[in-house]
Image (cartoon, rainbow, N blue to C red; front, side, top):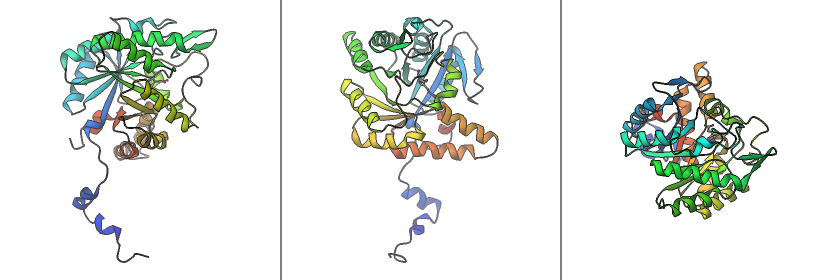
Length: 324
Ligand code: PBG
């Protein structure tokens, strides 16, 4: 009807014009890089299901975190792989545990780098669940105590942001209360608020050796079919004191990110999870897709949906060729 008055191709004639009318852009400031940290020194153990990602001992972690910072990436999130696991995940809240030492070393070496820690006991329990187990059930309230203790040891070691990823009810309130009572009122909580029970976490569970030894996570993580419930989880976490809320995974949940963006007024993070990363790497290794372009398109789609922060294993790779 409006043709030939309106010709949308007019604005697509050259690279300059394309840049001028571009609505969304990706910046290094949007990125958060995840790292897996293990015991030992000089350790760099490739994770077979995540090409390009390794488990690092603290010395190597510090040098890689430095590299991320020098590329303009403002933050990292740390996952610990302890040598010992038990039924209550006691290494998770050991003040001298793997994560607590890693935080101190990174903060020593690169004080300006924002350090985020994953607060969840699944990497530390021998049963692989994110909560206390009794008679095959995952106990909610008993877990809150452990999560609070864990978050406190992270704050004491110097973490800037604690990120509870367990999906127990009331964990944000419990952690906020513990931090406030111990003069850590300025520590930030980024809650994994709408976290779905997803098969896209597969490669991560190999990396962190954290697959549940019985059953699955469906009694605490969310059903992928639900949208309203995700909004309720997000609103509840904000009410309990979350400063930043996360949607996870990102790619199959862009609608959730978009909806959360319109419902709340706190910063939104999205986790471009391990399976999303590994699928691109695998297809690209086979020559079936252009890995770099697919990576950029995916990250841009997450940004376009409404996330301000993206946790991604692609972070350093992307940072090398985007505008600062
Ligand atoms: C729980 C946790 C998981 C991930 C981040 N935090 C695993 C799970 O819930 O099973 C997955 C991240 C990814 O797949 O990249 N500690």
